[in-house]
Image (cartoon, rainbow, N blue to C red):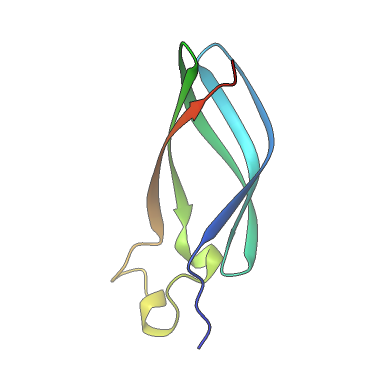
Length: 91
């Protein structure tokens, strides 16, 4: 049995104005890659930038839950994802 312990997001571009961002890239889970656009907010405080995002992925797009677990009447297909990044800027 193969295990897939991680997800990978590859950033392609960021656009937006002020604190509102649209982050576009590709999300890979279980060797399945899908394009993703994530709405996010940016808060800058001195040498720190904080990025928060909330979005939803469809688990079956990434084969998360197969066989009996693919029944969406038991386990919803929509999975909420929350991201909170604290980034340190170089002086």
